[in-house]
Length: 240
Image 1 (cartoon, rainbow, N blue to C red):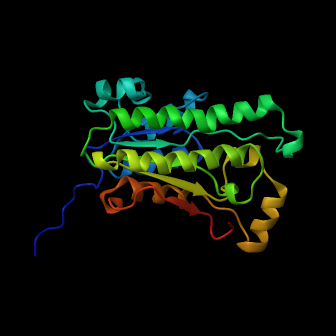
Image 2 (cartoon, rainbow, N blue to C red):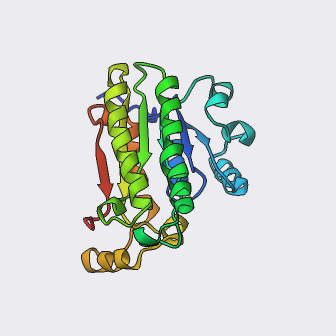
């Protein structure tokens, strides 16, 4: 029998993760790195967490790793092959639609929808054609529960990603959405919906850990997912 290959499945691949230093994004960054990818960790406001993650993964040049598209090639000699658009915000007030301020609505869409549009646009332009490119965006299973603002911004991401999947398929690139259920992260608890939490307790009894979400992303980033395109994968234990 031939000896088993020790090559990691994402060896030689460059990955970019927005919001990649905390919560689910951090777990995704760590999983991709563990599978051999060279990960560009993007963050908005907490460089210490990003640098801590870089140190854990033994990367010698944090300045290069904490880069975006323009510096990925400089850092790793290649544009990203895998782009994960995770960064997002919640409105901690969780208002009813009738009580939603236009400013809050616009702020949510600016990050969750417009932000992912910009990331997806660059990914579609810069991922090398026929390189097994992967684009993974994040939505939320709250789209099925429908709290205003946040759910609407993520529903738009789901539609946008499915459209993108058709546009990039001819280049050998896939685009899919991961929509987690309630997960034990700062982001979820910053904008928690008590009705949703009650529904979770009645349905599955607990919320998820980040370690239960990241493997779905790494599957979508791998060759094993080559025929999965334009899908919304709800990782929520069956709550929605």
